[in-house]
Image (cartoon, rainbow, N blue to C red; front, side, top):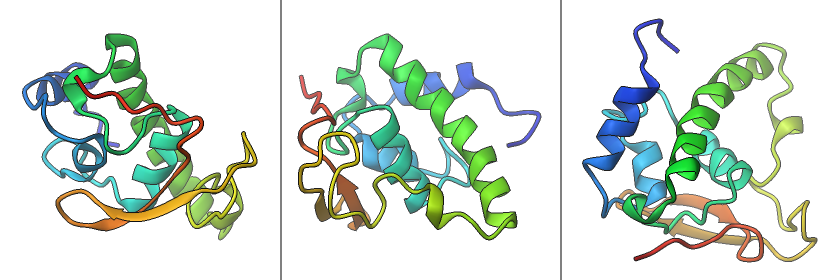
Length: 129
């Protein structure tokens, strides 16, 4: 959220870690400072990226979308939090059914930190290799 933040620098850091999982990249504070677990879940859902996707396997357009959506969502998150209405904006976090497909949402503890992750195997594409 800093004025010094750079989308280009963030994309560069991601490209330097092609084997990193999307769920880990979003939680890496050296790449996305301030991004937490809720933001991780919501951004991956909004960009339709499966949390176990390898960063290096994401098409360039999708990598850009991941960076941009994380940046945008951080501002939305703060605004909603100040209004005490954060939960009403969650699309996937803590949900049992996907709002897009009406299929069951998977809840697993993923990534190096084993953080609680919610995702839809129907609309979130797994990119690996």
